[in-house]
Length: 72
Image 1: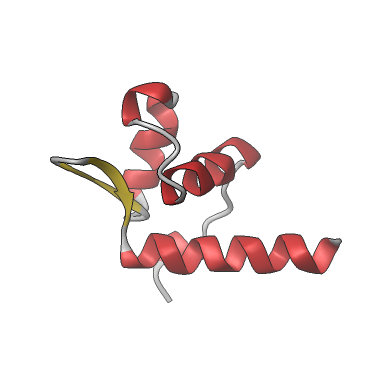
Image 2: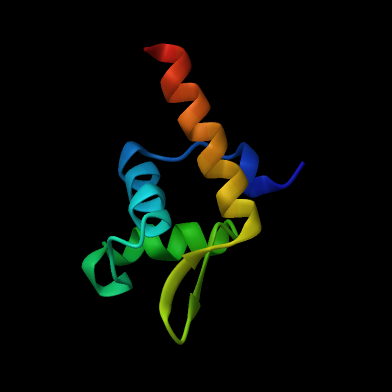
């Protein structure tokens, strides 16, 4: 399994991942260290249009959402 799916994310990193997925944020609106870590885990990438989830990032977001729903 890929590291980006296994490594624990902080609550802020999880929120950043969700906001990026929803298109609600520009990279400049997020804390730099969150962007650096999410990129290093291959969960996001920067394009000409801005920051977006990678395929791995979309899978991780699904996992986060399932975990959140299971806790409710």
